Image (cartoon, rainbow, N blue to C red; front, top):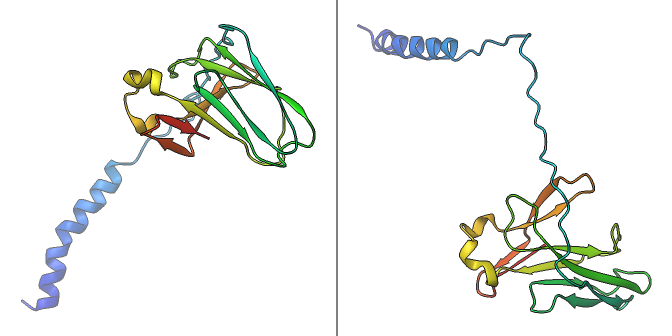
Length: 163
């Protein structure tokens, strides 16, 4: 046999296997099947577990921190156009994937001129953290649905997560 004919003959079974695999993997689409819809889980808002704290922060920026350091909000210079009362209130957590407490940051709907940094400490709940890669921040929208935003930084030594 000639070498080219022999190569073609050897490739024929492989080509047939690939063809049958392609045909076998074809999905039958039934136009009568209803479309798949995902309904987000609506959760109640958390309830206050104590007194909220507040700090007046202006154009120069500043930091407000929950006593004990569980949550800290760092506002850079120029992020605010005028003096604003920035608040933190500890709440019960209604996020089914969350651990520890939730915190309400106020004023609700505040728009900053520059990005602010929110840092949570997970030192008190380190035994509840299964995988460090899953640490991140989430927030609850007005409709009760929680959104996960991840983290910009995870400090395993200080046991903090920031966004």
